Image (cartoon, rainbow, N blue to C red; front, side, top):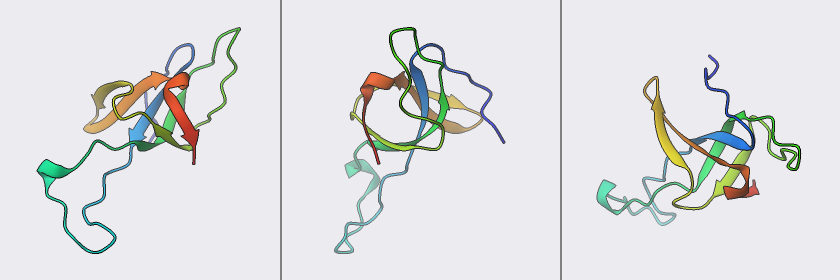
Length: 91
């Protein structure tokens, strides 16, 4: 099932990866203490601009800033839409 959103210009749509429920040592993290995810999967990429060629592609796992992008909900799934410049790294 494909996403029916095509980002414009140098924007990308990212599906955040859910935050961990346990620490490495096995401690369960309550919902109130969880941080916003900073990692996600690119699900749609714009065409870029004449001055900016897109680096990321669909399917890439990326790291982004904690408060980067605009949240949107489509068909019951949460997504972020942001400029490619807000992406920190491809994992």
